[in-house]
Amino acid sequence: MKQRIIIFITAFVILPIFKLPLFSESSGGGHSFFAGLHGDFTLPGICGLDKTFGLGWGLDAEAGLYIQNFSLGLTAGRSQVDDEGSLVKTMQETKFGVEAGYTFDKTVISFMPYWLGLRPNVSVLLDLYESEGYRSESKKLIGLKETSKGTSIAFEGGLFADFINLIHSETFSLIPVLGYKETVRLEDDGPVLSGNLSLGFRLTYTPPPPVDYDEWLAGLSGGSLVVKAPTRSKTFSPDGDGVDDIVVFDVSSDADEHGGVATWELRVYDPGNNLFWSQKGKGEVPAGFTWTGESIKGDPVESGCLYQYVWYIKAKDNADGFIPGLISTGIMIKENDGILSFSLSSIQFGPNSAEFDNISAEQAQRNHELFDAVAEILKRYSDYDVTIEGHANNVSGTEREHIKELLPLSQARAETVKRELIARGIDGERITAVGRGSEAMVSTKKEDWWKNRRVEFHMSRKGR
Image (tube, rainbow, N blue to C red; front, side, top):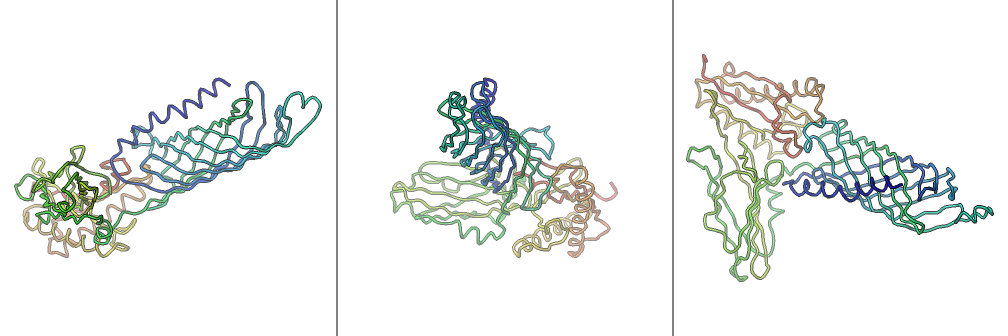
């Protein structure tokens, strides 16, 4: 009994201490919705040293939201006990409440396999029960059975193994779940503890990122203040050449009509919709406000991408407004031992395809502009040969996905890019297309998966 109480307190009290710092350090979006169904095998309930009720079974349903690895949701369940205990012969329970958990997967613990996540989970429940049995040992001796109904508060803490990345598509994932949870019911005679073995699944849906940027921006701007925040240059390429190495914002508003600017904030989001950089201030926004292109962690922007930004202005009378915009990064060439290289993670292909089917008109236009820009670079370096490398993201982390799916897919995508460049006047003899699958992934973190789906260009002088 004492050991089970210690286990439960550890799950219910100690868990948030470890969970919340991890959640607070996450700096970005990336949310998904889940619904789940679980079958439970209920172990005998213990109060003191007595077996209050026996074995049973149950069914639980849940629905909620993932914010990166943190999950929060509603849960409800029904259970039945027919195995007689010391006092209770049969019992039916209906429980509903809230739950929270945190999934420790490879993005948190580097040595974890891609297909496994360990999820401590806690719940607070309202327990509606109906039982048949004896109210006390004395009534049991005279054989006086009674039916009783009531409510109690119950707490659950458990550990679940989520078998992630096994069955998935672009937006949906089916996650088999196996776990154990301990339930504590607060009864008049003392807490009743029982264990549950659980087997089930979670179905998750991850909304795709916005692709119609004009519509997205128009829908975001608003507030009672009129805010304007254009950039001075069309593209931004912090490569140290002295041209467009910084972003300059010209920020203005009608806050003077509301007593002046009280506070302001700029947020920049990467192509994966994760918070990339932010800065806050008080009073007027400095004239010609600049950003160097580094993230909160000091990482540079990626080549050929669109970064979304939002300026927030709050006036002294609490009126506020905001305006979003887009920063387009140019293609930035890096040199290493005579090899000139650049990478593009923004070329859009169809889902699991090497063609441009099922992409939006805006994405198709963006592809066209990128291919034009790459062709101009290759014409400028006409005495260089180029190797085009296709790279992909290994969702399952398995060798099978790398060999059977990603190697041929990345090879086909590299060949598609080669065709586009030949159509723009580049000599095909200069170009070698190579598919590398997932052998050179940039990151295993889910919010950075977009960086793994990329095309790299490596130029070397002919004859080298």
